[in-house]
Length: 484
Image 1 (cartoon, helix red, strand yellow):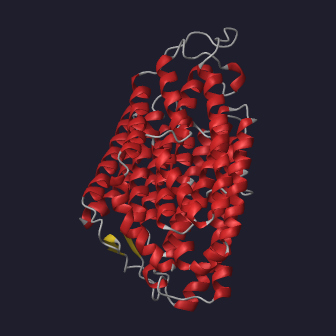
Image 2 (cartoon, one colour; image 1 turned 90 degrees about the vertical axis):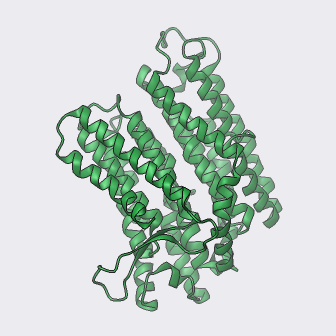
Image 3 (tube, helix red, strand yellow; image 1 turned 120 degrees about the vertical axis):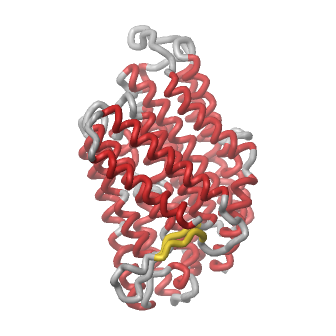
């Protein structure tokens, strides 16, 4: 099955190559969409043939041709990375379908950026070498910077693109220096070898802080979150889907893959710091969401609160919290993009995202209202939806580690229900503001299909999570043996 993995990586790049020679806009859209769907199909095959009982990476590709001493990086998939690859290949075709009508200029470059981004994301989540991971981790910035800066929806899009690029790039400088130091000290950057290396306590603390500076910006954690609302507001709809669906997971995946197993002593040492920042993020993100008037900013700040639940669970360092956090990441990768997509549906019709102008849409857009209520319920972790399983297990694991922290964190659930239901009530119900909102068509077939697909994914995880846990369990158990 190794060749299927190779094709999964190469397929987006082949799509880029073909699109470069195309001129017809319709053909470019069809080729880009079909290419992304084939990549999704290949990633699902990898999931079907994945052996849940194997500890070590599967479908390994050894890159021995790189002419650097003791540098033999490899790509592979384990239980921790599999679902993030599938999530990436799922969100990309949804982004492209969401863009079929909204993007009017430079279509070829737009599709090329998304396919390059897809290839880089697959490489990020399959890298088992910290230097290779860093290259792809930072490489993701370039296409995303272009998507925000070129195809953004408002005047501040270039400023938002630089916010995103500079915040994340500067945060990763210390991580690069740490990787270079590890290479000269240990003689390799191979992750499977580094798992066996015991760094001193001081080395672990310094290295953990260096990696933290990069991952915390990507999550983003308080106070490194300033770039996120700006980037979301100025991005096109598909850009917001990518940011919320996959890119925010790069930081938490970095904690899971590198910081926790490589620097386990430092991770335990800094757990109170993570707990404090996460609790502040939950409370601050929720309260800030309540006072926003821009629909995208409301969902962006709610993402800060939800990702704080993830970091809280990751550093509780037990089976329930880790598996719950991973499932919560996957759930957030479906629910948050769905909400951004629905906001995009409104923006396409009324060309404003200000909450003041919306009310009573259930009367003119009943299908839209149905999906908005459903994803609002998923966003507040209603039982039966994907977020409930992840959030419940995360809090359960945190409670077994520190019950006071878990009790404070539950306040975030109450605040989350407050801002989500308030937003839903303001948009969907009430009297139509006829001075601003006139009759408009409900969701078209393309929008309806996308909303249904995201709904099915959300329900699938919520109703049958064991399919995911059976794949995660072996890899999470192995990670905890490295910590202990």
